[in-house]
Length: 423
Ligand code: ATP
Ligand code: MG
Image 1 (tube, rainbow, N blue to C red):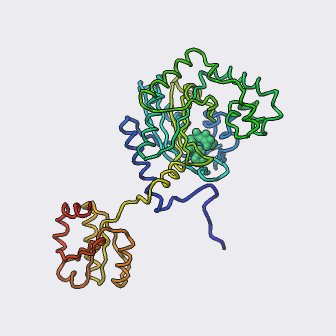
Image 2: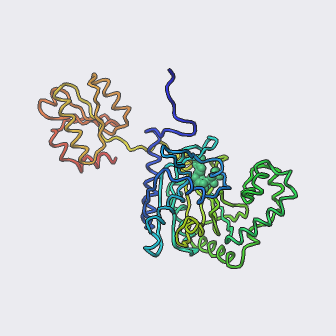
Image 3: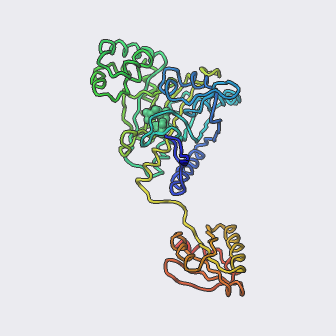
């Protein structure tokens, strides 16, 4: 019988890779904490209606990418394809709006979309995202963008571009939609099949088409930025000015629309030159209508999500393995020595050292080979004679220097060991 494998579009994150994930999570967590964002954890599955209403029935996500099934109680349930809808549901359900002022929230975790798997595109993937609820100010837009930029900068990423656009108020968007449909309808038969389909359902999404002929036709299409009402226009200029003040460069891209229905005004994406086709690492925008649309009080909001798989592909191009180095590899042989080694390992761990204990009971030679491979800074050796007089051999693996130390002394010279380990 064949062995069972992970489902297509899902991946195991193995120990060799986990250091990158932990680094991203810890940097994001600390930057978000310093900006006074608080973590929220919402369920991985929700009522299907939440996503239908929140994301929009005409979107690709709802139309063809959701994992939707009936549970045993015959309810329609969907694995979350993104984070915002669940966060907004929780915000409404727990009356977080009533607490007044703004809510700054972040989340991290797996999302599920039935897509064609390829590099940087999976069926279970991970996002870190923020939602700033309760402020209509352009400063809120600039704040969330600055935080994303800070996370990516701190991770050492280069060759990134911030693409910025405004799709205006819902009215602006509606007017633009009509203008775009008027313009495209005469070319309908020349558009790629997906775009033909979108012409009636979700015409703004046609701007995203990768098809060459469609892009040619779009060259002369109406520009959304020329159709914003004066307020929307001023608002967009303010966002740009604030980003300039923050030293964040951007490119305006009037073709940038986001796939989800709920966006208003600012939309943005951060793309990398080093990712090939799946270039967008961070995407977001303002969604002033969503909270009300999901039954909550009128609440302006802005947020983004970073795709972690893509981010980690980039970091792996930059850095070698970053998993923490073992301080001590503990080698022992003989009943008494093995028992003492376990206690010694435990004591050193309590003092904050990273200690790997060899459990094999094999010959010293084999254990030493494993010590070398472990990448440990030093090896601690316990044989029968060390066990008898309660000492231990401390061997620095880089130089081969070795000395005998009383076990009790080793556990009290913590500071000195730390300094030696730091070299
Ligand atoms: P794309 O155009 O690449 O499909 P999207 O517009 O569907 O992206 P969002 O819903 O805005 O993406 O999600 C934000 C980010 O999450 C994306 O920019 C990307 O980095 C990541 N992401 C989205 N879908 C996937 C996926 N299937 N696999 C891996 N990462 C993804
Ligand atoms: Mg997508």
